[in-house]
Amino acid sequence: MKILCILYDDPKDGMPKSYPVKELPKLEKYPDGMTLPTPKGIDFKPGELLGCVSGELGLRKFLKDRGHTLVVTSDKDAKGCVADKELVDADVVIVNEGGWNIADAVKRSYDVEGMHVGTIAAGRIGYDMLRKMAPFDVHLHYFDKHRLPKDKEKELNLTYHDSVKSLVAVCDVVNISCPLHPETEHMFNDDLISKCKPGAYIINTARGKICDKDAIARALKSGQLSGYAGDVWFPQPAPNDHVWRTMPNHGMTPHTSGTSLSAQARYAAGVREILECFFDKKPIRDPYLIVKDGQLAGMGAHSYTKGTATGGSEEAAKYKK
Image 1 (cartoon, one colour):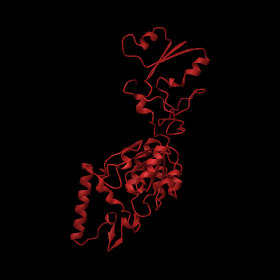
Image 2 (image 1 turned 180 degrees about the horizontal axis):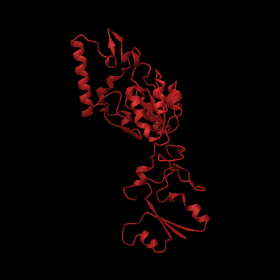
Image 3 (image 1 turned 60 degrees about the horizontal axis):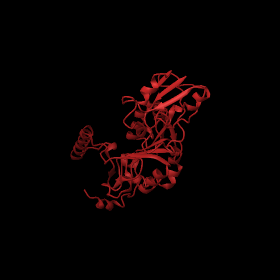
Image 4 (image 1 turned 90 degrees about the vertical axis):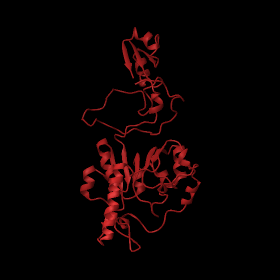
């Protein structure tokens, strides 16, 4: 038989020589219970680019061994195109999205389903991230100085780690939600990043200085990290020559977290509440309290350690608007 595959073009710079993630998560079924495809065998490595012309959907050897002919093309639109000519005597036609340089867009794209996702700090924000990720059928992990109650762990089927090193060794995606203080300053340095699962992604929406900026850039260049994303920099605003502006495989934005119009309504109300308590000499609720009488208090005592982690802020002066 003759099988015609109409697939999308190869990436403009050629087929990938390596891939960010070395091994895909092992999945057995879809969320609705349907099992995944179960062919008798495959002649490709899961996670490689298969949907373009050179990928051939991994069918070449399988069809050749059975004596069939495989024709693969992306030429399908113009009059007299390859697809039109080959279609007339094809027994089977397989068609894939086409256009829009699809291969270039997806050659570093993975489903999060089945991955191990963890957060460093599982307070209000970190726990909410875990809660939002739970419907995506991922394995959820967390590290926090204060272990969550058993019912909260059970609610999301969380795995607790008693150290950051333990968490990063098994997670494909690491979310940072801890505050910046002396214990977390440059926590993600060369040493910790070397302990990360190879090809992991880091998301930092906490504070830029929790990560050593040069160590992050080196890890992205070497491939130890597949990607780094966030909206926090150190210093802020970032100088024009900040290495995160030009490092590969990043998704950085200006620091706008928590400043949506919805969020502004919440923090404006919070400021009003704090002022009302202060003026009326009433206690400020603990989640809003960071320092009292010169000492860490409330949420500050829960989350921070004493000391400063702001050295180097003068670099922001190099920023030119």
